Length: 516
Figure (cartoon, rainbow, N blue to C red):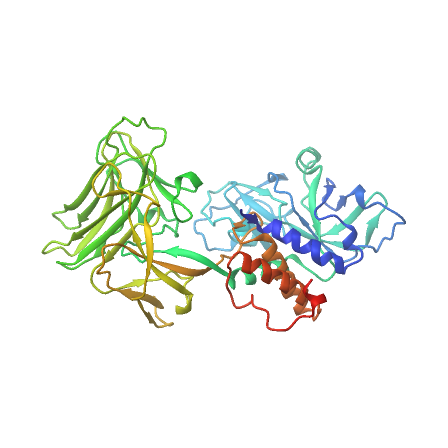
């Protein structure tokens, strides 16, 4: 089960709020509405007892509702095209209503954080904010205001009867109908005094990158064999048709995405891997998980084929596995010797029927019977992350030669790999072995969790573990001895999920009372 960064952050705030008598009385999140002038938030729930104007002075408030972005009034557009993905100066038609700290959205594709107002038509921004991807944009594209994730603070003496909170900086001033319909009952987080969202997020991400969990990764000569770069340029089209990455769980055998290929009306179209160098006489061990369109008629016949191909001016097929028409994942698996004179090869995934739809899942494995050094992913930085080498042995055959039912295989451990490490190199670490056995070799590795770049970004890390560990680290920073209690609770969750990492083990003896 995955959790968003915002969900974890809210759990952290609930715990830390108990250290702040005023914030502890505020629900996380609390509901309220933004005034049309953007200067106040009204939260009737907070209007209890005698009103103290200074009750919430200086506390940070963040918008926790991911509603649609709204137009500025008057409307704001780009004053010039954005032609790259790295530039931080943006030209707009008018910056009059834009404030430092605003989150703007351009054509619903990219969010940017406003860092400075340079002039009446120029702003400085952080690109690709809230987990979005920096993109190019056309001149005159609409610039909208997106309050989701916007942070502001309560003014001194800024609390009044009726639960009215005066804030600064203000939200964008827009037309009443827009605010009323989209943010009439928004959700907000109030942070304990002395705590800011950026600090919580930084400590949360530190926990994630220092916590690892078991991960299956296959060394492969195929570039981007696990599709982790999410770059279609690594899987060019053959002839015609389309290919896209899918993140639908039912379409993925391993990894985070799979390559869905829709062939054209002509037979023989599809996609291919990038090429890799080989030597003649070298034997390739190939494993490709493939699945055909689940809505296709089971009697439709041949759908796809996998080809090991010689890449030269006189290109030729070295090995083809055809008649692939299973609706469940099957592993195309074979060993093939590189012919004389061949120096470069690749894999092709082609249609064997018009308009066929089929899916290639990670890992696209090609290994050599000769000693090769395989580049490891950037997240693999230490030799000790390798826990086990396993041989992946296909078991139940499908109805076609060189094709086996996926996940029917057995596995057994082997120990015959070495590491080559040089931290200043372009490729700082490689794993090396000669696969002289019959089956592909995979690695069970302790892989760190990825950091969360936006409030909507998700992680499969256990929410309670991340929250407890983050609270522990924050309290330790503040020299609050309660950190030991939350560290112990995080350790219990970590052991339950078999997590590993430098920050998990407790190094200080706890009393019984501190542990519970």
